[in-house]
Length: 393
Ligand SMILES: Cc1ncc(COP(=O)(O)O)c(C=O)c1O
View (cartoon, rainbow, N blue to C red):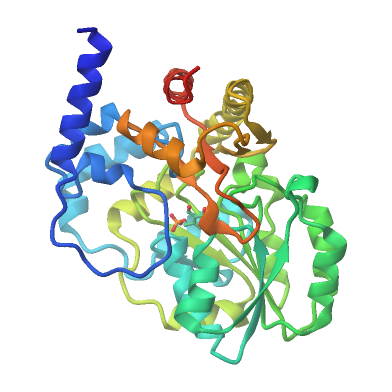
């Protein structure tokens, strides 16, 4: 029996053990990546199994948090766990203010952008509201709008032929129409990896009518350039709000920390609805330390481009049509003669590789579209080896 076969058989067995389901809970929320936790075990009894799986189904950073983040947490861990955090994230707001150049009253932290999305959208909209989203885009937005709030959602369809670029003329028309209570933009967009430059976006935002709020989700923007952010612009406008997750660009997905940036009139009503100690002490300390080390992160973001190019070459060599991106993931279309996305995903999963089926992220996809996260060089080599095996190459 070959060594590889034994490793694979062992991996399948341990994944099966770890994934024995506990009592199933009814959850009719949005579909997300993260199936890899079934392999590791959600009771965390076999956390070491993480070394045997590749979680390219979520877009967590491929690099660890800055050394000073880890040092601060290591040094004070018992105290950080046993202590109540600053009630309203005062210090975190101060550091965001210093680093990002916006005033304190314009910043509202939350426990990840998901927390802020649920807070703001449910406060601003009701069943009679009308919203516009990109199609495809991050699906939590359509879930909250359609299933949680129950409002009308229009879709600005992006075309494969145009590499899913956002057509600025059509966006401008929608923005100016005055028909929307909220327009949601994810920039760079997920799962397409397409980006609208700051000046181009600002030039269409100037004509937004006062009744329309614009939400700009900049979860991945630092991979392009942190100076492209519209945080400062949003704080000067009446109705543009920027949502900055710290998960993916600061390698803090597990910590749960993000912030909103907008006018005082937009932010203050939401601050009143934010519970005390909303962001854990570990997350506040991690976020503050991360914000203080822009050089470390800028270097990792630059390295991401080379890794993404290597991944793109590898995926193209499988016969996949790769949509060129600018962040830490790639979208690809599988050719007709290959298995479908669900088949590829199921076969990769047996080998410990988790990839993301994006069909739930828009109405424009068939079952031959897949999203792959950028990983470290050696991990990407292994990913491509597994994909070659699965595709019979
Ligand atoms: C575009 C986008 N916005 C928001 C989120 C949620 O991020 P957070 O970890 O801050 O809740 C994600 C997560 O994948 C995302 O892709």
